[in-house]
Length: 52
Image 1 (tube, one colour):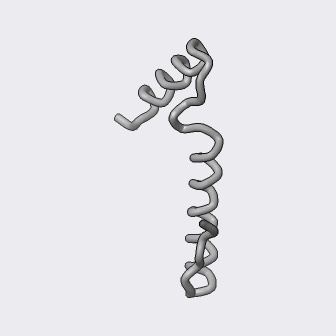
Image 2: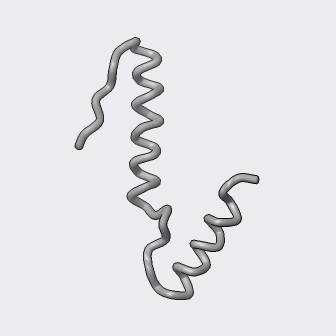
């Protein structure tokens, strides 16, 4: 079983308690950034530095 039940539970708790979910917008943004960098790296055959 994946993490989906825990993610849904956290989302519902966040809505009920008016707080940011653990997997919020920042985590989503960083995840997409890393995945995109991996694609670029694979296509160009080079290391891709991420901002930070």
